[in-house]
Length: 207
Length: 207
Image 1 (cartoon, rainbow over the protein chains, first blue to last red):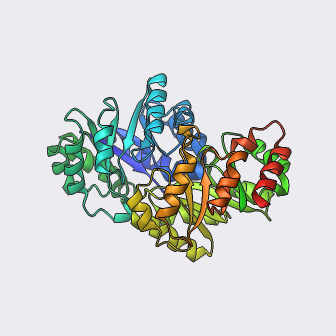
Image 2 (cartoon, one colour):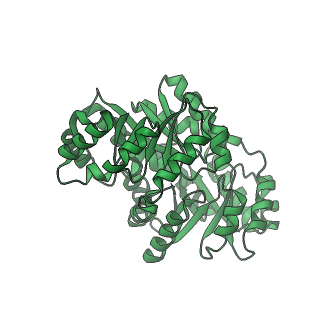
Image 3 (cartoon, helix red, strand yellow):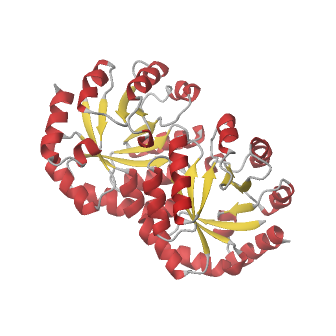
């Protein structure tokens, strides 16, 4: 399993400091939606990638419309992975997939609030990573049930990430459920000792 | 009926030029999602509002999560109206509504890809403006059917906007259907004569 660290609701200087302190414990650096919306694609995505060129960077751009345009801008800013919402129109998700292929990059379909029948249909996107995602406005209640239900709706071969209230205690469950990426936000980034928190998650995720 | 002009996929300098050329024909200036994501909230929303302080400005921030945080940032940047997706979690939409009330500002619930039963539940948000919204990745096909269906799912008193392939020819239909705001994008902003195109839409919308 891989560890993805989601960075949100901080300045770009703080984001840089967080990435340095977390160090190599983290496999994927997520430039959170709030950073992209507050500071724009160029300053947030391209800015952070240029400071950490060797790192795998996911841009949580959360596309709902204008798939080709938004994905194009995101990959041009050097993101390795871009996100589209599972609740977006099928035509939008297809445009995102095609743009990802065109750039030779990866894409994630975020299943936040996506109805079951739509998830079943999305399973056909064989090269996507699916994010099993509990809204943060729900404060972490119900992640396990959501992971179990949505894993069944997808294909056995679908790559998955889990996000929304992931704790150190929930990592063994996520591994057992076959989740490929654990997405951790404030449990690392708002920790007093970011390096130690990231290392603890890395130990649990990588063991 | 009011005319909302959506500005997308241009530089901020071009956005400024478009707003000047469209002039007073336009009632609501929409800072499109692409401008917010590309240039960030401060440069796009606050930047344009500071140049056009007397104008009513809608920020198409399309919140999917972190309702209070994203709406707070949007209103702090002086937007008059902020948007949240109808497909977001109910807790997220409630957080957006509460933040809008706290700032004494307006909010729009964007019904892009929102299932019928969710639209019925959202009708309870009596102070919202609802955007009946065809994905632009569908290229304008089916807007009338969508408006008719979604108007029935909402309350008679719900305020509504229509977006996605609105043409000069579709304005009489939208008025007859009781839509309060016509959202027009590239039909004005990509027109060779922006002032004339905006005036033509304004004539049809306001008559």
